[in-house]
Length: 395
Image (cartoon, rainbow, N blue to C red; front, top):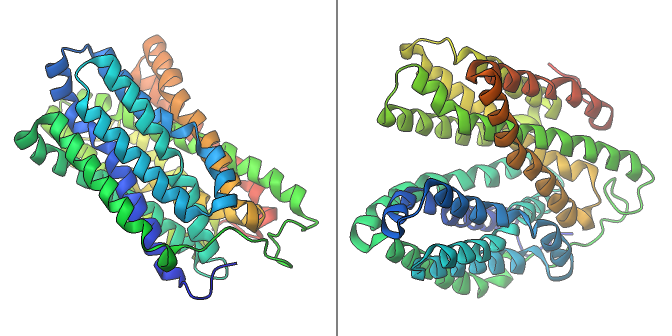
């Protein structure tokens, strides 16, 4: 149960701040990669490996972080995770050769394993009685603020300090910020998760097994959703290139896509509480499948609003899915189940570029886009299995 002295709003603010910083740290290397490549004389494969190692390592400790949170509480795990990730960024800033940079990218990446499962778990418990979907949607949306801040901050500091100095100073600020935040543990710390006796989500519910089966179905949907998101991010630039867009226009289009995604996360978190999870899935993933294929044929003038709506559909589903996890799992074990959920989602993130890349190489980009749209459409009938557990009807 939530400590009565700590308001849910404070927990939401804390979770949002932690998410902003975590996503900023993991997005920061992206605008610095060209400078790193030139300075260390790296190949494109080595540059890709650095980013993959940094992001991929964050998925390794998500499940262990969930178990540890049940013992120590989400507050300390979130602060420790961001402290760890920030220290890794400092190490990356000091690196003078590829393998050293790779090692610190892995080390720093491991610290990111706490953020997504525990941030969602903490906020869902704080808003267990009402407003949970909107709250989880808000903390989910906040991470996009960090992603949007990273390129601006990184690009500005790169000119002054170089890529190494930028990583060192941002990482150093993160260490100080986390140490200061730890002093406010009595303000934000909910303590360890406690079983909610008598609740439908407590450990003794006789319906626990069916709900766990629903959780598995939700995890499959989450993996497919992540596969779509990653596939679109990888291959949309090539679709836009086919429309004759240059680098600057493609970058602007991606900013529009990310802006729509941020709005989608916030709006769909609120919408989930109003019309239900299944309806949100049908709206967002239906739009995504349709607009993804339309992007192949839309003229230059109309591609911009299309991309904005595509971004809303692409990212909006996640807020509904994250909030729904809490409906299927015991209150006192949410941290571990969120860890499982986010880890299974990584299957889609890792597998999509490989599968769709193979299809594109074999059959061409247009056919690969159709395959991506079809795979996205399969989420719709799968989501219908959730209705009997959620007592919802689709719009």
